[in-house]
Image (cartoon, rainbow, N blue to C red):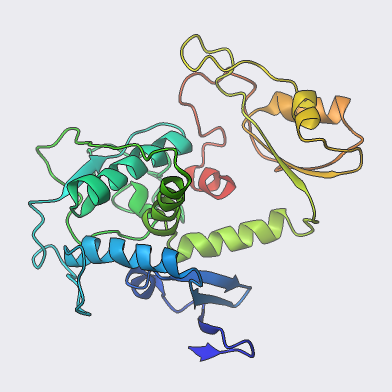
Length: 304
């Protein structure tokens, strides 16, 4: 660890030095820099956010709301795992899957005031892989393949088929902010090997991303499906109009649908489109919950 000219503290290591165990117990630090040889962590500058993440960690690893000691439970033998909130995973789109766990985590912290653990339901999570030769493979075949552990308690409870309690955060700005911190900055902190793959992936596919730009997400995988929320078809021109995007502007296009790519090429060549050249389906042709058009779960996680 060191301090730069702006008195900002940081800790750096080469990619061959494992940092996962350190980051698990320093949630008030964030990844601040990555390059071909090194990665760095720096303290989170927002003190409210840093304190909130410390509170979560104390409950998750000390089983105390306001622990003051510096030790933590490193194994289930040291922590009482009989009185925790748990949730199974679901196999759905990434947004639905992460929201399912995020609302259960919120319930555990703010309602039950108990540690939270994700438990295995004896089936492979949709975005994990059974291919043992893949970089994304891990024995548990669940979210643990990509994200840091959140609790020392076991993930296997053989007698539990489905366990899930959830509370949806209110629409108040502060609750939504805390929910974002809890999910993105604690529950889904990426493992080092995932971060390394993602860094290389971005360098390969988006080497010359220019700013400013507009990000456009066109979702069509469930357009016209005859059940709620009855998502209607929207042409790309509608997105352009709503965003007040001008010819020549750079647009980073995110979409699950090949017809969207065909549409912008044919009808909107006057914009500077940036998008992934990757396998996609057209509209709903792949059917319900077919979220792996490439057949490679690790690749789909990198794209997302």
